[in-house]
Image (cartoon, rainbow, N blue to C red; front, side, top):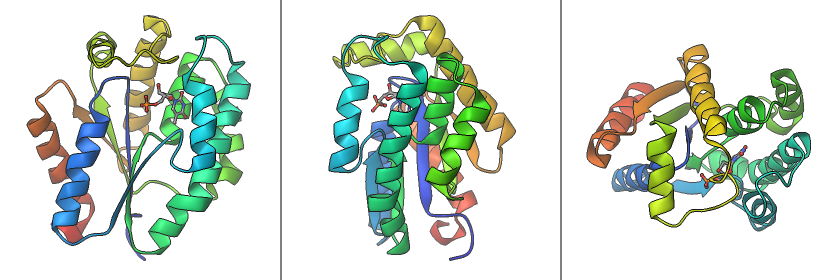
Amino acid sequence: MTGPARFITFEGGEGAGKTTQIARLAERLRDRGAMVTVTREPGGTPEAEAIRGLLVQGEAGRWDPLAETLLHLAARRQHLERLIRPALAGGRWVLCDRFLDSTRAYQGAAQGVAPDVIEALAQPVMQGLEPGLTLVLDLPPQAGLARAAARGDTGRYERWPLSHHQAIRQAFLDIAAREPDRCRVVDAEQPPEAVAAVIWQTMQGRFPEVA
Ligand code: TMP
């Protein structure tokens, strides 16, 4: 296949509305007859979901940051090999809730794992696969955390200090500024319909086959 991979990742802080937007985009693509796989990280396969349980539950500081990075990468490797690559090879679109940029933001920017360590460890996991488009849903962390709390999400990452969440937001914006061809920042404080409209417009620009 030529052109960008039909592999679309959604990134952003807590409560940014990724799940809602992924469902909308999947529906829109399916309406056009496309085959779509919706998945998430950490998780997406039974083994990676088991690793997710270790990561999202328990005390906020339970993991050494490098150990936590390795767990995310282990889950990602399993997810890539057993679900994402086969789906792409079968001609499916893959819409993934979080991916490597979350490791860069959460374990790198917030927890202090050196960027070159993350990139070096990620290389054999990824083997050159890159998302064809990354949508960064951006909003102030206070607003996102309030949304997450309102729906009862009180997992380990939600309990990290606000300063971590501020660093995470900035990290996503920095990644998007460095990689403008792959990433698009979307203002996630807008109503969901407006966010969905920007996403669809971006899709049409990036993937001429859906225009
Ligand atoms: P979710 O709540 O958006 O489903 O994601 C679970 C949590 O996992 C989220 O708070 C961010 C965190 N996370 C990382 O810290 N590093 C990663 O690489 C990924 C994929 C997620």
